[in-house]
Image (cartoon, rainbow, N blue to C red):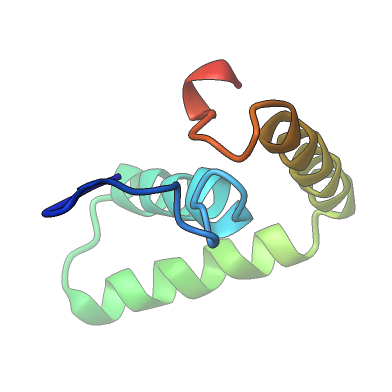
Length: 87
């Protein structure tokens, strides 16, 4: 990250470590927009459907949990610096 006073360390809540940032929003967005929602209500309905499907997919949840552990290890190995380009 770059600040007015120079480079600062990678923030403690790195999006590289958060499943919502590295996985969830992109998947939901892609699946919703593939269906060409007609209006805001249709969009909301499609988002709710997508979350219902994701919540019922135990295998996917397990894969994501393992991925978080792997990403944490990569973050540690990289001394807390940005690492998404390594994953």
